[in-house]
Length: 278
Image 1 (spheres, rainbow, N blue to C red):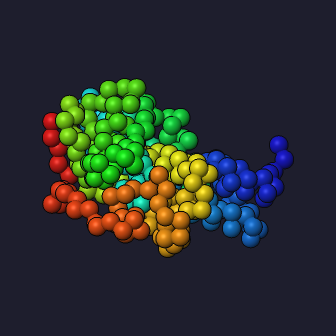
Image 2 (cartoon, rainbow, N blue to C red):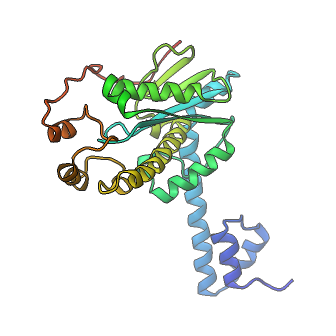
């Protein structure tokens, strides 16, 4: 067999990420060419990055692994997206991952760029044991307040799962009156792989909805800012007034309508550390 060219080696062991066989590596280490030395250095860097990522993923599975070790396999991560925008529903996702599941790059959705979120969301949907999306509409947000609407969206996501969960891992809260053990994890989307996966599904589902909403209500820029209170959105709100998708309980929208701010009753504080309840 002829020796592989540098271009072939780069394609196989860097671009495609295949493991470099020991015999091939030993042969390359005898090759004095600068290009080969650079290739080996790049492969070693990738190995180190993979080790670091593997350690991060193991840490993010600590909550799930404690359940799996006890034979509790149907553990759902739950998270929401869209609590602070001025327009559009609040979305939530629930995800049950197979025991030992890992996917490089999964993290708090806010840390990921849109293309990475979409790529990871597709893999999560393909490989999860079950997943579901729930949402609370603008009218429900205005009637209940955004905190309770977020809980409603999460409840709907859990109820939409094709499998019945045995436990819920939730980002910093509990869902009232659900008959499952629940663990509220502060900054859970950065500490639990299941919650991080749910955050990615909720975020990508809501972003897609806001792009669709942009075509129904042009001029506000929903496809770009997804309803968040950025200067572009505030200027459009002043110029055009609210559309049916705007949350009329939110102060900037009420200001444009000439209404007084809504007094919202919220919990005094979120949990300071993770805790569980039956």
